[in-house]
Length: 83
Image 1 (cartoon, one colour):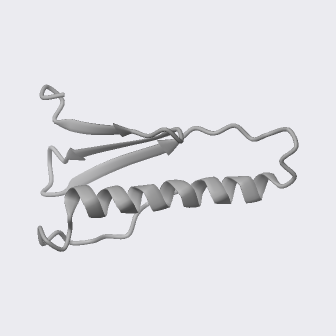
Image 2: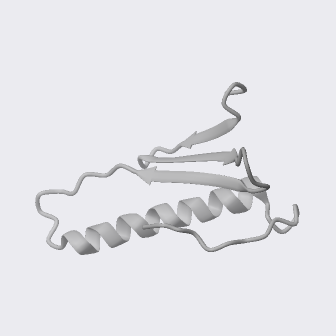
């Protein structure tokens, strides 16, 4: 949306990633989420949670590399604050 100056990507696996410029600092911010339901026969909830987090982390890394191209655009990489 040109009014909000954000770009949101929607993926078939339930992920959403929104990228926007900070309004107060010279940085690019991103927000990500994944919506998945645990199956009733899923034995280990913590394992399901970890696998889901890894899936989201990999997708975010791919979007950052392909869309922002940090090396080409001389962007400084920072650690994420993922939970």
